[in-house]
Image (tube, rainbow, N blue to C red; front, side):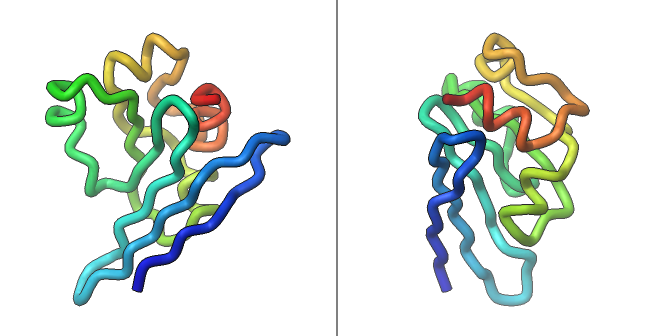
Length: 97
């Protein structure tokens, strides 16, 4: 099943994307205007090579989990937007508007 929701974050609207996978945790992302925060399925090295603005969190199964989790890794473009390891996913996505 694929679920897409609009998420209100500080008056802005992000897009939540969740894909339930067989025998696996879900693939889940919260997408802002200028990048996204995604679960551990994100290969940060590949995202870096592609020039993507992205941050990775892990151990998440819901959109709220993504927003509450600590950022584990970021691409250099995400760093340029002020996203840092250890900040909450909510703080990271706020920087992507």
